Each structure stands twice: as structure tokens, then as C-alpha cells.
Image 1 (cartoon, one colour):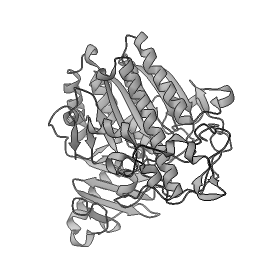
Image 2 (cartoon, rainbow, N blue to C red):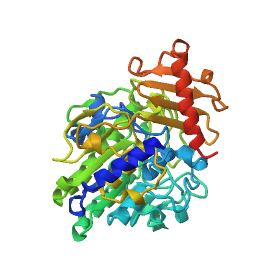
Image 3 (cartoon, rainbow, N blue to C red):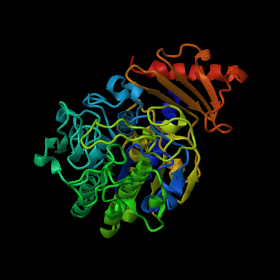
Image 4 (cartoon, rainbow, N blue to C red):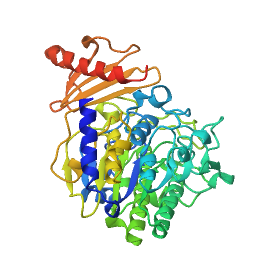
Length: 475
């Protein structure tokens, strides 16, 4: 409660700094399954010049955290609360409602503050239209209600939620078949930006891309030929020489010998170009200087994929770029939850790096403060903190924990406090300090050495922190 009170007091103070005429447009970009090393500014092997430029001219959070899977991270972003506070479908990828109707979201708060609110992309917080984004504060929504889709036919897995491509909850006839999902999502985002010139209100544009989640499918102009290895040359993809996403001026993508890794690099190139189109639309409409742009991935890299879950879905093995940390998607080790995150607002946010650990839950209070909302009307059970002191000055955040658990059965847990982190994998929840691994991240960022036996008092203190969080979770 002490931390919550400090957070709300900070929000109330900073809200006075955001008069209506000074409120920025807000663009929240979320890539899917893009690991720490799957972006150029972390890895020279990756071609992502538009994202790299935004990161270089913005504030890069070197310890940016999310949840280990897509739906839980979206819960955190939308509600400012950890998914464990809701339990059930919020804890892993699901088509069921992740949180109840009436739950305040960042779109709710910004809509009530006078923003035009739009979503273009992947919702995956309740795949039935009755639980879609228009019921949670969005004036406009477009894309898939469910999760990953075939990139060209935009269908989810077979079953009840297979037909999912919609506008404002109504399924679109033909599902916009024949155009890459990333291009459709980008075109809609550009439309929202261009039409904002005719509105007096600022806008909140949430763009959760489907890329670079599987199925990876980069056909270029060969839309009738799904991405497949060339039977005459199994080290090359069909039509690869003529598909622009496999080529960059420095030859980085073609320098990758593994065709599956090369396909991921092509998908990143495509995503990066689409981010560039969104930024160009802001420039073209004269709104770039008045727009805060936030970028994050939703979780760590997939790594391996069995295929055949979605239309034209390839089996892929070890297809992401190698991580400098332990774990991947679904893990509460660093590789599953530690991702690229930055914020860019020309003339308002200074370029640089910040090593403060932040989390996806922090963006709701941050954006609500920038919108000038009244702190008294905000949810009183937030887990997130306003990042304004980091974005706009030399301030610091209050002391706090970061806390993770994953799966409906809840079999993975972690808590970070300062540079210390405890991790537990198992079928039963940890009940005593001895159940945990303990890592000192400053000395061991790869989490290779469990030092619990050397620091039993530290492990016990961290277990107590876990128990305090567990008491706030849905039981």
C-alpha cells in the first residue's frame, strides 16, 4: 500500500504538468516474439534501421521487462496490473476473457480524457467480439480478435475462433485475404494518423503487430506461393532472390547461412519498414513533434516451433538470433521476459539509456499521467509506476519488486528486487525459502550460478516478498 500511495501521489503531481493543449499523441508499438537479440541496436546481424534510429534518438530502457507470453503482457499493458491479479486466462495465451468487462484499461482512461483511441493489430484478451477492444475504451479497432494468424489469409487456428479478422468487432468479409497482416495493420495505423488531422482531440494508437510471431511467411509479390524452401536448393527459400525483405544494403540478411534464421531476419526487416511507414505518416501530417512513441516486444523469442498450428505454418528450429541470457519465450528467466524497450518524443525525451528495471505494467500510469487524467479516477490497485521521472528528468522510481508467474496451472515464478532475483519452476507453488533459486543479476546476468546456499538470508527475504505478492493474486 505504501508503494501504491507513492505511485498515485506521483501521478497526481505530474498530471498538473500536462494541460490539455500540451498532451501528446501516443503511439504504442508492440512486436510479437521479438527477442532481445532480434533487433539491430542490440545485434549487428539484424537489419532494423528505422527501429534503431528511434532507439538511438530516444530513451532506451536496458532493463525493460514484460511477461513471458503474449496474453499476459497485453493484460499488463492494458490494465497496469499483473496478470496474476486476475488469474485464469490472464496467465497464459488464451481465447477466453483475460479480465472482466468493466475493467479499466489505458484506452478507457485516455478515452475519458478526451483522446481518440484506436487499436490496429492483435487483441488476444478475449477472442469473442463480445469481449473485444471496443468494450474496453477503444473508439476504433481493426485486426484479429484472436492471437497469431496466417499472414496472408488472417485465420487463427481451426475451431471456434478461426475466423477473427474484424473491424470494430464485426468480421470482415473475405478477411482482407491476400495482403500480409503486417501491411494491413500498418495501413490502418497510417489511416488513423492521417484522419487525426480532422479531429481536435489527441489520439492514442495501439499497434500490436502479429510479426515476428509464427507463422513466418514473407512472400513479397508472390502472394499465391506460401513461403517454402526451394526443393532444388534447400538452403534457399522459393523466390528469395526477388523478395525485398531478404535483402538489405549491407548484406546482413544474406550473410546469415541458416535459412530459418534468415527468414526471421526477413520478417524483422518487414516489420521495421512498417514501423517506418507509421513514423513517416506522423512526419507527413506534421505531428511527429507532438507524438510520444513507445516500443516494446511482448516476450522473448520463440526459438523452436513445431508448425501446422496456423495456415501455411512452417516447422522451424532455433530460428531466432542467439540470446546473451538464459531462457526464451514462456520462461521467467531473463531470456523470456527481458526485451527491447524504448520511448521516443522529439524535443521532449533526451536520447540515452536508462538501466532502471521497468515493466509493462508501468505504461498505463505513465500514459495516463501524460494525458492529464485525474489520479482520483484511476484504478486504485495498480502494480505499475509512472515512468515520468525517468523519461523527462533525472528522477528515480520508488523502491519496488518485479514479480512474475506463468501458466493457468502456475508452474513458473520469479521475483526481482534490486539486482537479486529468485526463480522457481515446479508443479507446486513455493512455500518456503528453500524452494527457490537465487541469482545476483549484476554479477551473473545469464543466471548461470545459483547462489542461494551462499545467501540464505537474502533468499529468505526474497521469499517473503513473493509471499506478499502472492497474497494479492487471484486465488
